[in-house]
Image 1 (spheres, helix red, strand yellow):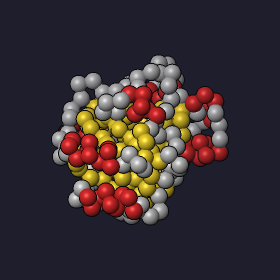
Image 2 (cartoon, rainbow, N blue to C red; image 1 turned 135 degrees about the vertical axis):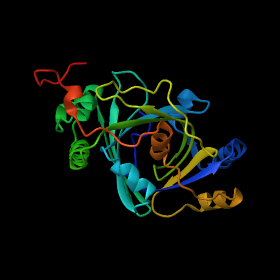
Image 3 (cartoon, one colour; image 1 turned 45 degrees about the vertical axis):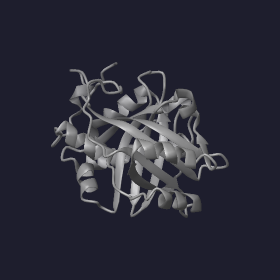
Image 4 (cartoon, one colour; image 1 turned 180 degrees about the vertical axis):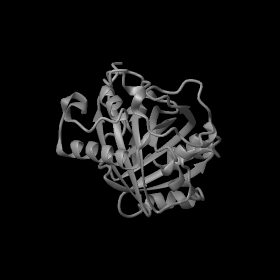
Length: 266
């Protein structure tokens, strides 16, 4: 699925651009990048990206973001459609000053449901039975962080993405995100793209320049030519605020279990 080949460490610079600028920038990057396979498949404004963000009852991770803490993390479960046969991805996104570090593993939808229910990490949760040290490490760390802050499902964050990638390697990537939508998560419910969500206002198309190590010369030129101004676009924060979420109930796993204490079936 989209974005499986993620860097373990990278920089991400965000900007707002107009639709006219987005079209011009797309032409500018043609010598350096090509549409990723999912943009080729979907065309138009790109493919859907949906994530269920986790937080604790006091919205600790939300607060850390709006306070601009230099070292923080996010927990999310990402998926790209409503098909229960397709994987979901546990993601840990850490920010260490300006460096972004990610860990990610593919799990089955049932595995994601069990993890949201508070179950400990288990190899059977991995998608397609494909176990690896890297995937197991990511799943265990996700569950450990979940338990450390008593995190639970909070908010769906949904948008459409156009992504362009380097032909030779995975060192550079440019994305355009549009139509941000936030959706309420009901504990025990399925992972699904929001219906009748709310649309936080954006100041344009969200452009992200992603790279490892040094800022590429051509990206620097792009920034100068289009007079780009770096900004912060915290999608999770925007969706929480648009939905009017002030706090969550204390972590209560009862919604996931029946009267006999057994995990509810789907």
